[in-house]
Image 1: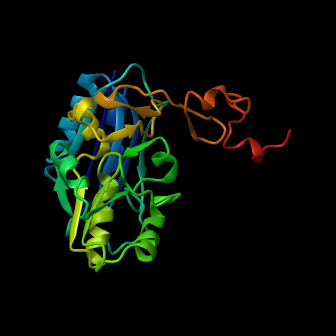
Image 2: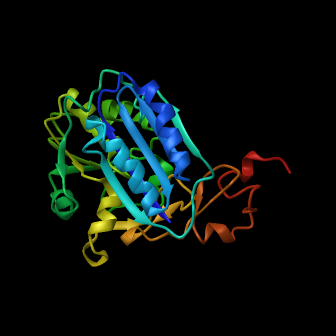
Length: 273
């Protein structure tokens, strides 16, 4: 079983018409997962056989707009999705700032092999742009957690906590790189001059950087039934609370408040006896 994540910011005025043929092809190949389509681009995670994934990616690339999709593939032990969905959205990643256009400007891409040097520079402010529950299970050493509940809150964090005249160099990272495309575009529009982001995101870093050279600490949350991955994109140790959706460590899974499908330490107080 293989899983592939892919995205691209590109003008898709015909995104509504693209939905049916993409869904039908994925279903014909027995793929499962979710693909988002919007006027600003495409964002997807699909799982199935290697040949089926190759078929859909080759089909997408026949549309020249998808020729250079950002793609990451990994082998996994089991199917992590229940069905195949292709959704139409206003944004493929929701920032809530329609004026932000990554096709016009984005920050400077940093290869995984060069990332350690960037974030080890004391003049660089390193920001994890993911949500707080994602940050809680793993992040880069010394990175700032904006403590956001959703990506929509990132602009508010920038406005209240960052200043272009004080934070001369900013480096950002996220799971697969897509949120940083928008985040870096937004920060450039707000006057920040040197904005870097990890190309391919944490997943590419964990895939390419050996554990002995890594500055990553913990595991990386992923939005599928694997829950989290480690170096080499191997399955992690976290489980998902089916009641509230919070990732649970092995220690939290032994908590007296954890009852599979009912409650966990994060939601037990919200439930009645």
